[in-house]
Image (cartoon, rainbow, N blue to C red):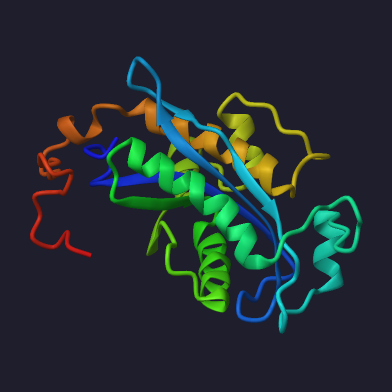
Length: 218
């Protein structure tokens, strides 16, 4: 895995939020699915880690967002955690998965991935978390992947095009969306296992898992 992605472990992340502005709207749910390798060397979704998050002090919630997600912020059974604890609950298994595969850190995979990354980075900044396992700006976006593979950019349509089921009643749950996005990523990534070796001019991974490319440094 470290050689395939230049020392990074792909981890699918989905967040549910109180709006679209990561600078002021609350993070309400987060789920992460590390990508694993099966015995045949094919990408498969790993075990999901997730947390319901209490709205952080100073953040706000747009009621229209709750109409879409169906989240009941004050429900006694939601089991929401303070933002720092919720991040720790997700980050610990991500760091363990990265270590397992010999990766230096995780790279976020998402559908419209920078939306998820921006909310994640905003939460990390609020709690001043020092052990964020994710690359701060690089992502793999399944919108691009699905657009190239199927001509579809909407998650539900891309999932259908990949031959998977989509339950609209479960959509807008961080766990459900992350699990489906992880399946989509694996199907597309497994479709071109030899693309790096077959395409002229594509730099190959070195023994350290870094591309032999002078511009590849972070």
